[in-house]
Length: 394
Image 1: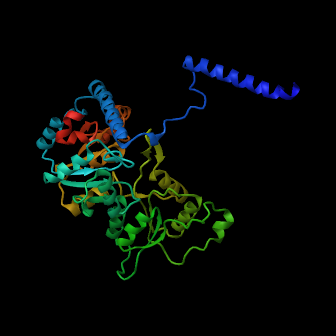
Image 2: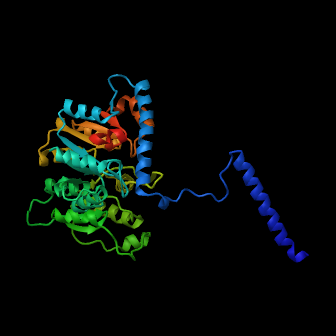
Image 3: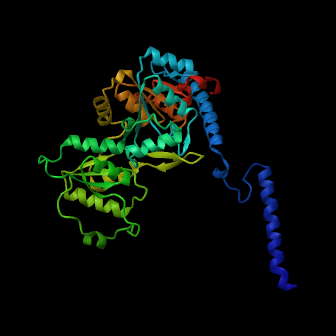
């Protein structure tokens, strides 16, 4: 009998826990024992798109209430409720050029936003100038083009010069700085970032160090390791920071000493984004801004931002592509980057509700007099409202 006593006690404990859990669940005080979040793999792309569509429309209802009840007439953005509203806005403001942010606007991960493909194809077919302006520095222009063609299913109509990624902009900015007076000397740039960023900088004519480490490279660095580290001879002319999913203390140490040894080297950030959204439940993935802050804090330097909302980016777009700001609409999902970028550059700005910004964010900026540059010109749920035939499906 004593032999079975532990087993009997275990069974009694399990039954007691099960009964207690059921009672608490029935009272709404706790989730079922061992509950888990929905399996994202069970959702099809169509399910995800439909969910995004419905969520954005519901968020638009909240935005409408915020704007109508807590916003002065002078600050009030135009709320687009139908495609006819959008077409009227484009016509009345003589909009000829459209700049689109990508993640959170045209797609989330590998899923296209509602009617994103039809919207882009229709604008191009109508002779509008379309560009894709992203702070994502992980990809080359060709890689971004390939992704958009695949996700939006619009092969054959997109061109590489429509792609304006922050990696490309960083290269163009450094070229404009003419870091070397001697044209025969190759400028050296140290990179924190991906192979895509390194490739864009190499294409711009720079000699690159850093980037992705070999697989067996340690992530840490002790005092002795740093003291013994064999820094290469010669100067670097710039250090460029792009989002690096393998960023670590070793890379931070190396970057800090390089800036210490090269006080005249430019410190350039491809963007200062705080976070990105990932997953079906929109989890916050720390962005490049977190990496930049670490390097700035350790080095005592301040980075030059070449991504949205910087004037460096808007000047490049206007000069290279010959656009007029007053005829341009910036479409984005972030108030601090996309909308501020459009407003600061003299463009019109459109906020979609499929990415980072929420009705709470909009309420906050409308109450803050110092955040007026974050207030969009127009707001609509998703890019499908820009597509004529989508009005009935919105």
